[in-house]
Image 1 (cartoon, rainbow, N blue to C red):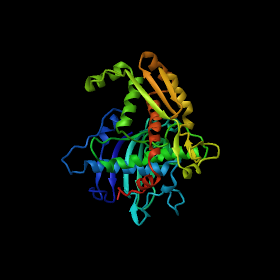
Image 2 (image 1 turned 90 degrees about the horizontal axis):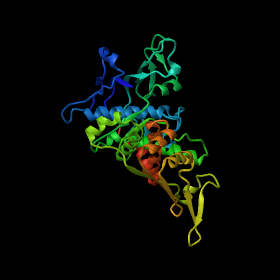
Image 3 (image 1 turned 45 degrees about the vertical axis):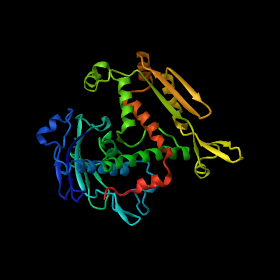
Image 4 (image 1 turned 90 degrees about the vertical axis):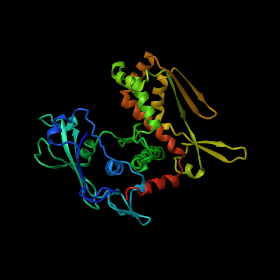
Amino acid sequence: MKLLRLKIDEPFRCLQAGFELHFLREWDKENAGDFAPYILAGPNGSGKSNVLELLAAIFYQLECQYLTYRPDVLTPPGFSDGFSNAFVKRQGVEEQRPNAYEMEYLAPVPKRMQGGNKATHAHIKITKTPDSSARIFWLNHPEYGEEKPLSRVDARELLPEFVLGYSSGENEILSLPFFKMRFIQFDEYLDSLKNNQSYGGKPESRQTFLDNAFNQAILLSNLLFEEPNTLQPFREEVGIEGLAQFRIILKKSIEISATQANEFPEGFLIIDEDIDGSKIFHLPILHKFEPIIDRLQRCATCFYHDTESDTLYLDYLVTEATREAFKNNFASAIDLFQYLQILLILNLCSVSEPLKTDLYMSTAFT
């Protein structure tokens, strides 16, 4: 994906209505397939972070609009589509900004949508008018010849494959949409347990914030999969020669309250008794990950299951055989990272429901 243009029709933080930014102009489009990052440079207070916050907020809205799964707290009563980017008033506070914008970008065309001329890049335009959902158009459609409104299925395929966020400082406004999406990803998996539904092992949404734990997972995946020549510039710049050993610790079940236990199917939980005879409920949190755990276990040098704490320890001494095992069990570095991503997200099980609701309902975009 290559951003082309962004314009807002209502104020967003310090950015005024009518603010417009061109990332790639007509004479640069032929280089759209090259790695050419766009850099925002300017003095403090000039609005650099606000542009990134705006993009994070927009992609969060788009994700929520097109996700198959959304938590009930994000489904305002009275909206037939289950989600609206309008000013939804909850607890007397207006939220869900930005409310009006245009954005254009180039996206690789999926094979099923290429048509006879094998178009490689689609020119996508997204428009949102006040108090309405965003609409997505394909401007250079090979057969339609003009702006083609995209169906929900096609629009989802032409959204970016990944939206990654990173901040070296304490920019919580930038990270907030990404952390909201983490909880959506967590609830997506948790609801699959509660309703005994299938789960593919990877989050549906594409929005990921690269904090310390997630960066470790990316580094691990790349050091296991990439060829030495590919990683040579990384070694020269960062000074890391390679990966010697690592450990993955998986808590297979967690204790939950009796109230939480009522949300799960009968017979699904592990029930013990305390010394006073009261019931202790344990949720097998990794129930739908057993096939993935088996694959990780096949790649391990050794492993140990502590039955008392129901914790699995997987230890890896990294050799060529270890790398080959990972390549035989996972399709790519990205494939491995996406599985590690959702395992990391399951750490959110320790967050209380009131705190999670507060995060969902936060109004940082206003």
